[in-house]
Amino acid sequence: MDSNNSVLNLITDPHELERMYRTDPKAFKKSFSYAWELHPDSQVLRVWHERLHFKETATKEKPSLYQKGFLVMALLAILAGVSTRIIFHFVEQEAIAPINLAFGIIPFIAAYFVYHNKPKRSIIYSLSALFIISGFYLNMLPINFKDSIILVYLHLPIFLWVLVGISFTGNDYLKGSKRLAYLKFNLEFGILYASLAFSGMVLAVLTMQLFSFVGLDIEDFYFSNIVLFGAAALAIVATYLVFMNLKLAKNITPYIAKIFSPLVLLTLLVYLVTVLGVGENPFVDRDFLIAFNGILLGVLAVTIFSITERDSDEKKNISDYIHVALIVLALIIDSVALSAIVFRLSSFGMTPNRLAVLGVNILIWVNLIWIMFSYMRFLQNKSELSTIQDSVTKYLPVYGLWAAFVTFTFPMIFL
Image (cartoon, rainbow, N blue to C red; front, top):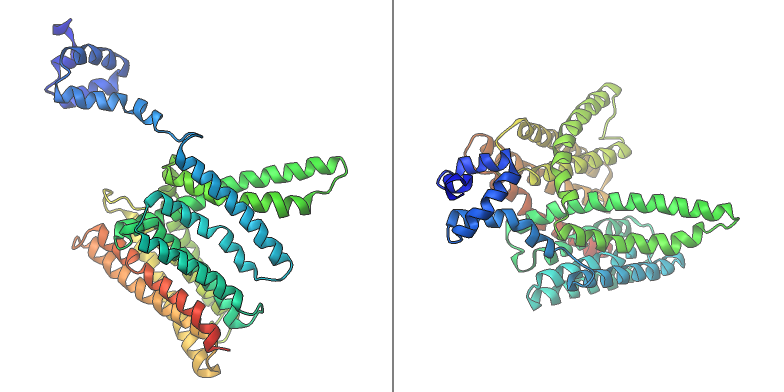
């Protein structure tokens, strides 16, 4: 049989071995088994042996109910659910601000990352201190709807998001590749959480409907206890699933990025042309200026996630030019918004809202300029894709610092 064994005859021809495997995998495996018994020391056959039996090894490593990582995730999910329910009780009593609900979820996601990455003690102590200080500071503020307090409510989650990013990157928080991985995690987490949450909503509606058939209205109880607990716990479960390399989210995110980029570009072009035709003016219309800034943030988010999901091995294509067009469009929007904000500041004076919007628009404008020039160099073959990704990842701490500045200083500056 040795002389008729296809694998042995083609052992010096990798291309034909691959062709044979793809043509008839069963025949290949049968022939390979015999060849492996005769020549277990062959480097070529050892590579094929690992390739053919890798799935069996990977199956043994799948998470189970008895793995420590799964048990830690389950414990953190329960703690997140219980904490959120307790915080919600005090929110209902109007004893604390609703933004405190973030502390029922975000610290536990960070705790999971700390458990998984095992960063240095200095990082763990720093993160713990910042979470505690943020919580105490938030609840020292008066519960009202003054502009400076509302700005704290808007910026504190951004600051906490940066803290989660530090726990995600661990000891490698200075590495751009780890920051890029964190951005990808956010997109995958969002998709997976939305999918699971939708399933949970369907279950909740069915449950409440079934109880209504027997004359019981459980809506308030179900939302306050089951839904709230489940929403918080689900965040930890989704984090665990994404971290365990769940293929559902990872396979779909690149396609979402490619589909949404041209759609967003087309929609915004039509919208801006319509706005010019209607005659709306962000210089005098405050609500329109707010909407304009909302559009800017949306374009920035789509642009960043499109860049982070781009495969480094992928050749230049039409998507890259769409990304550049989106960046240019975002720069135009930001420039108009900045002009309108400066006009309003000079005409109506300084307020916390105007200063906050001015600051974030300047930060975004600088970031977009950096991204645009990096992309132009990439399209001219003067740099690698990593240069564009660096323009995104290296700038992330700037947003975090601005969020911290607004959160911790505005209530004191604008008493």
